[in-house]
Length: 363
Figure (spheres, helix red, strand yellow):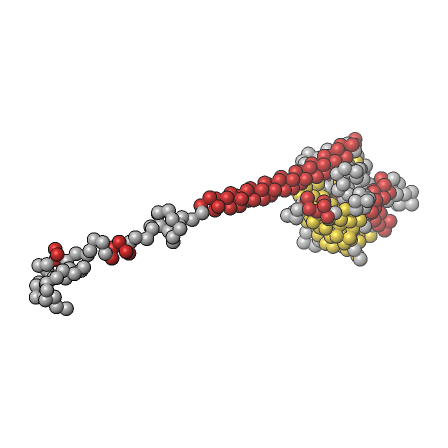
């Protein structure tokens, strides 16, 4: 563009033919032109009603504060629920342990260690509200005490019971009748130790020795028993090794009994009545452990005879009554005598029904 009159414009371009670099100082933007028109709008930090209006910070703070309060309330409720759960578990466990130990002491039997009680991972507090406790695991330490007054090996005195391990699932509680408790699946593990087997066999032999028709009256006494894990039999020593008899524990239609595999005296068979008395006494002793539960497994171990019993939809009161009836029959001597009481019943009601039963799991 030419500028014949050499007039200055708003943009003050250099004259035609002049080097722009030499006229740099004269080439300036107008002071009252584009700069004021462009930057005349309010800035973001300036007050006003334009696009730079500041956000409403106080409203966001109120929302954040409300969220924190809700979280704190939920946290407190969760902590109270956890504390209540632990409190209920501790209370029930303490009641069960105390009842078992008191019942054992009442029958002149001592339990050196506290029973172990746990309820699995299912919430117990919720279970009490729904009348169903998901799981109950209990281990009652051995209270077995076998003694021989006056050193008479033929007349043992038995108190207490071997260790009992109980696993129960789906324990249903009847609120209208606290004695009416049912376990959906109940498993009991117990080992009949060699000392108890020997004591029961000795009692049975002593009872048979009183039979005047027995030609070996007074000579047939059980003096020792040895578990044979390879053959899965119990080897009974009679008359200090003069004679011997082998018996194998078996399960027959859910019941446990003993099968005689060898009974000889100098190559001759032992009296059948004597052998049957020992067999029947041991079978009764084993059956009294689980009441109306069914035997699932039996194994001869180095410690004795290990047994596993199981039942479905087991009424605990009926089970305890069954155990007590077996124990009462044995204690009256109808099946060769039995051990004294002092074990634990399977009725875990910490308030009304005792957890310990004087006759539970006793022969």
